[in-house]
Length: 522
Image 1 (cartoon, rainbow, N blue to C red):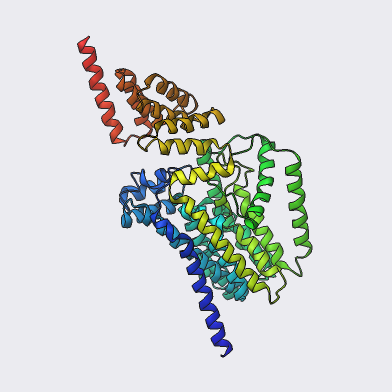
Image 2 (image 1 turned 120 degrees about the horizontal axis):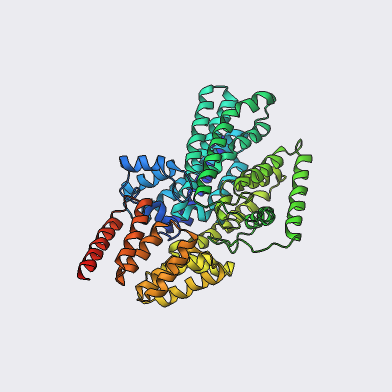
């Protein structure tokens, strides 16, 4: 067999393995349900998404923010999926899987085009395709922003490599355009200018650094604008948490070590990791020391092994926006945050380890093990109860998951008592959890325990005074016990926040009618 034939067969085998690995892991998701954790806000309970692509929906995608992010391209993708599949979760899951497969394929194309080295590029792409840490990004419909932004990220890198190699400005503009779309899919891509500078060092080996830096200015401008906008949006809705500076920084450094650990040993993964109440001082000190030692080592070796420095700084740099120095949300860390940063670690392995005959079979065994683990991890995402039960098993006291599980179970006939137990546990772990107070209030109201329900609604409103759903729930409960005029006030507050909520407008008119009738009767 000629070398050309062997090369062609090898390439076919790699692409076949890539596609087969993704299908083996994620084909099961087409039978999965939605998760009652953001999927409602992004898809099945979002009246601008469920009708599909419409003029109003497109306008809304560019003028509003869902769950604390301005991601119009992602929201348009959800609308497009709804146009094709309706509200069927299987179709929306399938889109995520397809985008993940495209991202893995683009990663392979990018690395081979940039380095000219097929086997290491294939290793990176295969690990990206099958690693269990990526299950959250693919199996969770709400994380469409991860897989979609990854497509634009790798398109940006491919176009940038072509620009540097061919010196055609059309590729530069294409890279900048793809970067802009990526930012509109997920703000985490703000680190792209830094990644491009890393590529300038290796594998592109550019010598004119003044020009290389100046070329990044438009990218930096887009990144800064998006970062400032995202911070403003998240701050305005309370998504940026005011954690003490010390514990925030400590958790960020410790999280880097956890990400490294979970990359090597992806066990006990969960949808939500509670933020620690306290962190022993030795942990962040040890983490800083470990990170500093590795950073120093790769910089010392940068001339002989530039891939080590580039891969390590890729990993460290891309995690900075979500490491927790500025805390977005209540999670200590999250699997989804490693979707793109992990590529840096695989680059270190693929190009940093000396090549011997045994490397290929060892890499093959590792990829097979990761695939088996990913199949199992994906199975937990079949429905909310299975996902949350697993999370509680591997994380222990988890207030958010207890609350979400209770809310999910409350919709299953005959399990209201169990739902209340989980919601009460959530409030025991975190008394200042307004959503749990609201949801426990709904459980109690549906059970006819109105006074306790009203008490929990009011506690929720003390923490989130303008939450429209809590006002609606309280208003509906007040109607049930004949306090119509009070209910009117709460429905009006809800409509001030969501004026197009037609069902609540009907509730308001009915409450007003009942209030007038009661006054006449008196």
